[in-house]
Image (cartoon, rainbow, N blue to C red; front, top):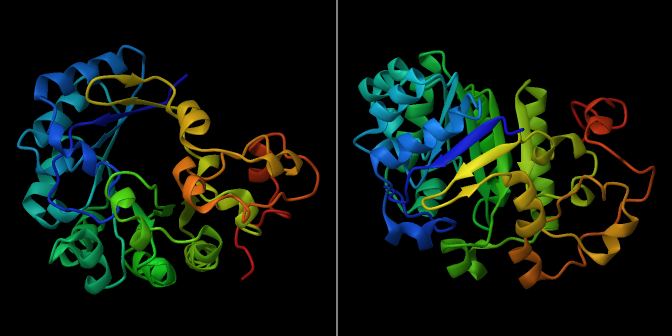
Length: 320
């Protein structure tokens, strides 16, 4: 049974990220207020009480506060705003979102400096706005769940991104290996890193978070390249989710993502993680091949709980 609904509110955005997976959808614009309300009602009828508003950029909608208020009114208890974080730098607007019922904020930070973040978002001043927004959210005692997309230009910056996020006092952060769709596909050669080269930097960033008692994880990074950091594979934690796109529902997003979005390889049949691993994004191996993904030999892991409940083999704070 689904625990959460992700509602795609449309595709307009005030950034133009070099890796944006939704860039090719921008021509479709935003959904109407009534369409989004209908999606909220439909999910509530299935007793789902957790919603993520996403886009595009939800916070630039003129009806954003109204939609958050409506979600609160019909019984959503957990209301997360997935965002580039820029609008949160307007303290008055942020307070109105919280008063309407927003209680989780998921801003995206893609660099530890303005030079890196603004380069990737192609929005001068975005770093200043996003970091200020995070400071305001924490000042108001709200939960921050940050996301950083890892590409060629920022992979070596991952440890410093982690240090900054710790300084900003976020509760949780994730490094997401870039998905080669939209702008990331168009800019493939300049955007796409090699996963095994990115992994050591991602691990350093994760360790910084773990040492500082943050919830940390990495998305689309298979277990074989996360040795010593297996418990930080984000697919261990993602709840069963329904996704409402503009014109259709994805009733079991986790299943569709695993079967259609990601892929395993012939060598994976010998890996101890084969029953729970999703593999990398298909688009990555289509271009890069799959030789870098090598089976991990050992006792078969049959469930996610075997990792989560084994702190000795899969430590809460890993070694370097």
